[in-house]
Image (tube, rainbow, N blue to C red):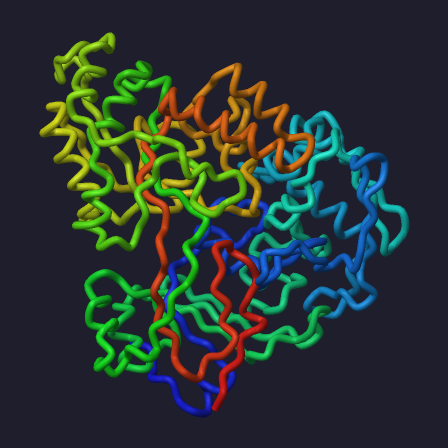
Length: 508
């Protein structure tokens, strides 16, 4: 059990419950659990601030030239690694080339760096360098992309573009257990399954964090009990505790905060190349057989918003008028009957839904209700299989699941981050194997041009994707409730994963 917070250690140390990250290598990360820690240890040329604006990180400023196809970044004179070595343009180039080296085995390098000229050749093993990344001098680097794209700068805020120490990586196989990075915090210690401690990087170029350390407890304790026992400073609030905490007479009610809904979508993906999901009528039938509003209300206590489409509310390009899949069991049965499998559930064969979770862990009540709705409305039995999260992510990218449940949280505020990355037929993040030549063409067109025109294009693209139903959209995160100790100040709550712990301080 974690020790209770004290006035002495609480004055400089933030403690929270977390989970073991699948990776601490920024070039390999694909999940929010890892990214939340990685953005505090590592950094890149640019970042996103608490106001969701793209600002300089290692780069103090940059110029955009050649009609938007060339970016020239100037590295801060005080930017250093944790050991004090100055960050150079060579470090930036080396890191991008390491991320795109086939031997690194990054699953998403093509998605986040693929706009850069020469990345494709590097990923294919046809080049030793990225031709579109050029060192001008020690503190200046030029990046050329294949076409003007308004979201390119935002892509560089993702960990795939982060800088690692070329004098450490490749020499020490366990470098990621004590990385010499550039972020506001250093990884001081990591006991797998127990705890991780980050310590302040006093020489951080944007100003040293106000906390001395951040401790992540990884032992999987009960968050609410730990919070009430003063073992952690922050915790999310689940449905079981919310009514109690909303009561103004409850002692902890004054510590309850609301956070803006995350830019996320929870969904069930359907492998469109795997029977019975190779028939769009089967995919549509499963969508219309679910009463999302009822599940959100009764099972999830209105802590989520039923998803009509792919893009979350208030996200750029979001269409509030999209009809979505209204609950219609009769239509669902008709669609199933019109499929090549007919209305005989046995003709569909064995259907397995894979979720992330420990073997033998309880299946979420919402998933159980969805199973029951499919059973009652369509006569379809769906088995649930659980897989350890790290293995789950590997298998997800290998497209071996028949159907799978997961969520996507935006990396940056542009609809390209949902619709292009998750549905273009050549995207490595297209885990359903979905392919529509019209959608591909429109996605490629929407990469260019004026934002408002692009948003209108993305709304049409979303409509076409929903008609094909490679996903069963479930929910978007609603208003979030968290408990924060009164001593914790400037803990920013944002709908994106961004570096934010350097702003936090604890008031004695």
